[in-house]
Length: 359
Image (cartoon, rainbow, N blue to C red; front, side, top):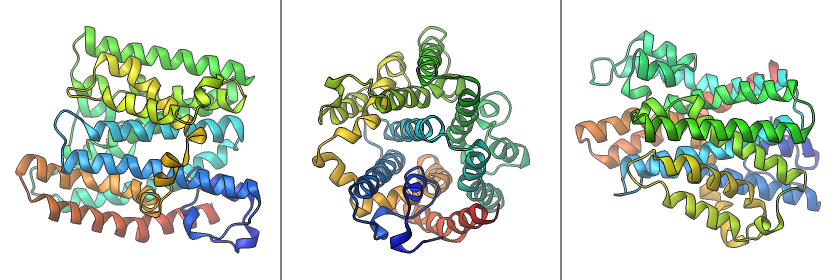
């Protein structure tokens, strides 16, 4: 629920920054205190990073760039942002776990449930139709394993990333309860991230596992989230080396990470070098110059960020029609935006607001 401008609290700003509400920084007049202006600016460019992530997914799927897998890259951008935000929420702000999981549920599940039901009905009779077994794996966040071992549906292939996210929430929440001392938390996050990165490199580069078999697994891809959370905590504790706080580090790290996402993906170098670079980029964005944070804070990027979840859900089936049936790109992309905006304003935003107020 929108509060009066004069009553917006620091806690509200924090929850908005973490995606706990869907109010854009550009749409609310906030107090003029320096701390509030800083929080508002951080909210804007993190929303912009999310907007950049979904833009890369859409471009990569509907207007593929030869030699660069923007779809995979966009998901990786989402993951490192999630790691940073979860690090702040669970280990710095110490958000109560009961409230944390309720907020995560209200953020993710209503729109996901509506998408799965609508897609299962709407795609009946098409080449990407799916039945209740595949739907169940999506709704129980097991699709990233079931999709390669048991049953698979092309319209739900993107759900693997939501599974990795949900599994990371559970692991990070468990660590926040069991492990004491932030230095110990950082050590554990780094060790687990390194093990996951090595797991991915070995699975793909040595054991020769296929793309989905290695790339979709939480025990591999959770590295992006864990490593980003670890860097976030190092920064919060003032332990991030000074040379990494240069205003150009975020751009340099992001460019380096992007250059490593050349086809085919994933690769061993991606797991061992690309992931750390992107995790570093999102966490050093706070030190970046206005030439980087300014465009990310622009209203188009912020709005894309706010719509990003619904856009991500709905783009998959339309992308399949373009990729596998040669359907016209522009009408399919227009349909993505129509369905996503309807989902956002009719389902995602109202359901989240109602659940957060009443549950």
